Image (cartoon, rainbow, N blue to C red; front, side, top):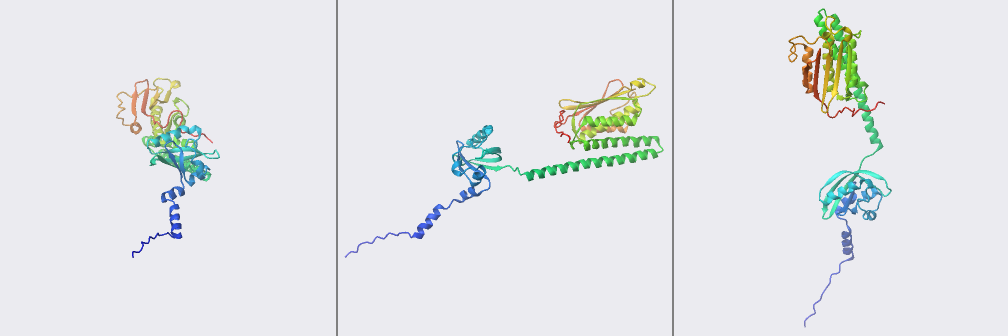
Length: 367
């Protein structure tokens, strides 16, 4: 007799069902990373609507995830920056990664400054936008301001000490000149003293300036000429006319300009004027001009004295002062010229630093 075939059905245990249910509910590792990252993350579709957000986004913007997925990027952006939002969405729809600064509006209508990085098409038709709030911690800002003040104090002290040290050297040269028996040696010491004083005066001007890296050249030139005029003509026999455009120069360029003026004016005071040749003493005059052009600066010093001696080779001079002027002109990248005017007229034209325009850009107000 044939026995009937027994069919058995295996019924999973309760424990098996529970385990399977738990495994089904376990989040994907990528989802866990998305939710627990500290950066604000939004997922947008091609229309710019938020389709997902992580916990950091909810905490920053004050919305629940259910509320955020009902909003578009335009609705999370201040109206004044709507074009920025449209540009971001356009870049994403064109599958271009982009980054930059942005502003978001929270549920409490507070505007937050953030920086963003957007990755297009992380999943077909979906784009990831990662946002990070700019640090506006008052303590950090205070630390930066304190560091800047410390740097300014340090730079100011450096200029002050350099000025004092140069003045000490100038004083030693003056003492050495007084002790020298040779007149030619005395003149050499005194001329070197004036060159050093010209550099010391520049550091003094910077020490007193609100900006420690750039100098208003007009102030420095007026002070330098006043010093030279007092040193060479204490009775004021020579009138000095000064016309200087308000140009801002860095320390190196201003130093070279000051040294060139020192050499030209020293030569004019020493050799241009004599009572045995015209003009008469009451008409002795030196003019100093500095003109700012579109892309260049011209420094011009002229006197109405007796002029240079016949046959003087100014392009290959034998005097130290004019040799130095040629070297300084090369360092400025300028063109040195002797002009055909009554008396002696020198000019040098050199490139104008584009970062220091004539309107005084970069100066800070005095406290």
